[in-house]
Length: 96
Image (cartoon, rainbow, N blue to C red; front, side):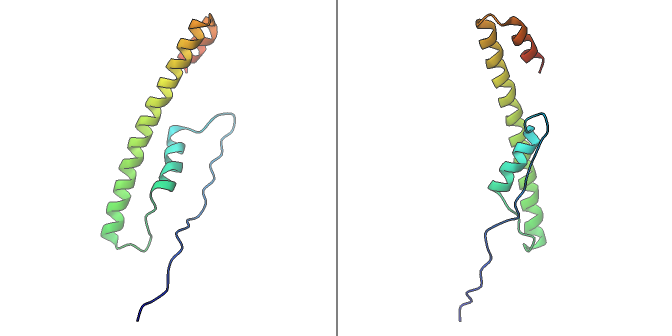
């Protein structure tokens, strides 16, 4: 006989807030990981440990590239401000 028991694919909601700033790459990576991968607390320990290690490595990779993206975006904004003659604003952005 087949069992019709199933578990919901929903997880607990996470809320990330910040005050007087945007979210950091680490916070954004955590938000992404919560959408990309959920590790079941009921998984066998060996599989769970491997999944958590994979999740941590993937998050580390996301943080690295999000930091690179943020720097690239600042470089683009810096160049645009310089082209428009806003040297003072460009310098502030360069220092971020």
